[in-house]
Amino acid sequence: MSTAAHVLLALLAAGPLHGYDLKKAHDLRFPKAKPMAFGQVYATLGRLERDGLVEQTGTDRDGGPDRTLFALTDAGHRALDTWLAAVETPAPYVSSDLLAKVVVALLVADPEQARTWLSAQRRAHTARLRELTALKADPTTGLGDVIAADFALTHLDADLRWMQTTLERVTDLHREIHG
Figure (cartoon, one colour):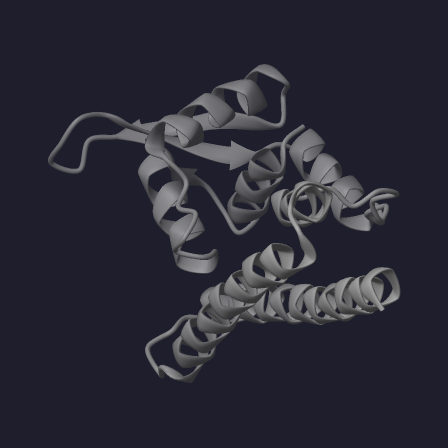
């Protein structure tokens, strides 16, 4: 089951909601950079209902089209508890566009060009660090966005440290080869 499905189960754990309200609740609690599309909400609800993890508990009109309320079933509660209790296995191999680009740059470029590309990437990471730090300082930023910013900042910092180490290794290798 997808992470999005588990997130919807978690949002329904507080009580029944309409699809529209689920999307709003998701987007309030998770980074605005990755809002959940309405189509994804309803497709996921359909799969969760098919699998017996949510059920329709009624409809209302509230001045507009019929809106279906969805609630977590006992099986949905168990599925959510099982997912939350499971420890995420750290990835055995790191794979990212950044890693691939750096390795390819080192393979095809002369060391000076590779350093230039790495330096440009470092500047982009540093600029993103500043943006996220400013976001966290904004008093209107919600808790979900602050937590997501902390997550991103930690990863950006690790990327920057890795790029610095890589730059130093490229420089050392260049010195060894060219004396």
